[in-house]
Image (tube, rainbow, N blue to C red; front, side):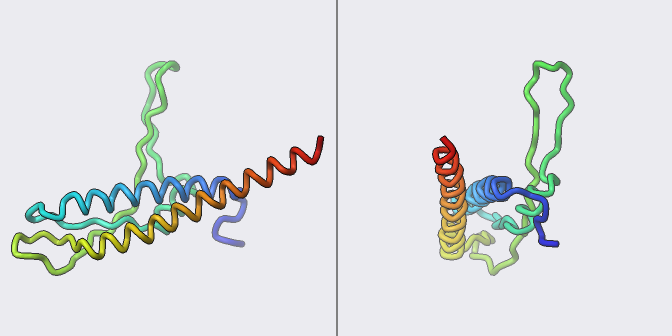
Length: 131
């Protein structure tokens, strides 16, 4: 069986968008801390986080005291702490590496969003042809 056997395409694409969004935030945080002394850059493991999200292992549900309360859910991404050479201030963020990661992640986000749009266009066309 495949890695995502029994999981529909929309779920994979939706979770892919969520993980790409989380990755974008992590990269942006690294870039924002490029001048912060002693800051160690962090990287999101895209594949492990996506697999966990699809398998439902990415959430921690909080107990609700009343039915009217909103569901409190916290996402649990898979992080990798990177050990690279540091600058004089012991900051381990390489701006060129982060920009490359940002570009790659943007490509993933665009791919997932294009595929989900294509999927719903096909559903729309199918429904229009039934009439």
